Image (cartoon, rainbow over all chains, first blue to last red; front, side, top):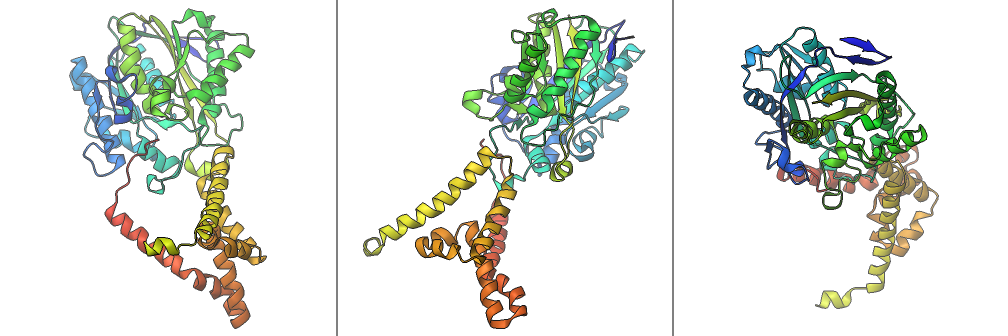
Length: 333
Length: 128
C-alpha cells in the first residue's frame, strides 16, 4: 500500500468485499430499501428481554449470516473489527463473544462501519486472508443512552434523526472479483461548535466536507469520478449543509451525492424528522443496497463516507460541543 | 344528564384555555429552541414557584382553577404557596416543611401511579 497526499492510503492489491449481510428492524423494513435487506425483524425486541440484548442478537446473527453466505469456514476468518454506539461497545462484544475470532472493538460513533472496513482493508492488504467487520445500532437502546428513555415519551425535535435499528457485516478477502476497496481516506476530528445533540447532521457535515475535500486533493479526483458519493448519516439537514459547503468550495456534488440516512426511510410516509442515523444506518444501506448495486455493476465507483458524532451523554449534559468525524473509502468494480 | 346540565361551561372553557396556552408555550419551546424536554419541565416548575412567590399566579388560579393548578407551573405555585403559608404559621421550620407538605399529595400520587404504570406497562418504540 502507498500513502498518497495527507490522509489517504491507496492499495496495491485492493481487498475484495467478498460478501455482505444485513438484518434490520421493522421500521427499516417499511422503508424504500426493504427488499435489499437479508432479514427484516417484526419486532425491535426480537424475543429478548432488553433492547441491548436484542441489539447484540442482531450483531450475532448478522455475523453468522455473512459467514454462512460467504461459504468461508469461520475458522479461516482471521480478524474481526466491530463497533456500535452503546457504552463500551457491548452490543458488539456481547454479540460476538462466541465467534472465536481475534477481535478489535472499535468506536467511531456512526462512522464505525467505514472505520472497521478501513482497518480491515489495511490488514488484508498486508497478508491477512479474510476479515469480518460489523457495525450496529438500535433505536431504543440509543434513545435511552444518548437522549431520553422511551418511558418518558417525549417529543423528538424536527432536526433530530432516527437511529436505525440494524446491523451490517462484511467479509473482506485478499482474493476475489471485487468490488474492491481501492483507497481509504481517514478523517480528522472536526468541531465547529454545534452543541445540540438533536442536530447531529449539522455537527457532522463539516467533518464530511473536510474528508471529502481531502480525498479529492489527495487522489486528484473530482466528484464526477464517482457514480455515487454517499455519506453515512447526515440526514436531510446535514445533506443540505454538505451540498452548500461543497458549492462554496467550487464543487458541484448534487448529481452524484446522497446520504444513507436519507435513502433508508421514506420522508413522507415514515416521518423520521431529519432521516436515519446510527452505525447501523451506513452499515445496512451499504451491506444491503449498495453492495448489490456494485455487484450488479449498476454502480461502478462509489465513495462511501461514514460520519460520526463523537459525543456522549455526559458531554452533552456538560454543555460540550459535538466533535464530528468522517471516514471515506472508495469502492470500485 | 343532570351532571352535564350543572356544568359551568364558561369555567370549563377558561380552564382549558389556560392549560392549553401553557401547553402551546411548551410546544413552541420544543420546536423553536434547543431546550430539552427535561429543561422545559424544570423551567415550568421554577416559573410557577416565582410567579407563586410574587403572588401573581394566584390570579391565574382564580381565573382558571384546575387549568392553572394541574399543569407543572401549578406544582411550582403549590410549592411557593405552601412555603409562604407555613412560614407565616411556623416560622423558619415552616419555610422548610411547607412546600413539600402542600405538594405531598401530588408527589405521592406521582410515585404511586408511576409505580403502578411500571408494573402494567412496557416501554415500546415510538411511532415517530
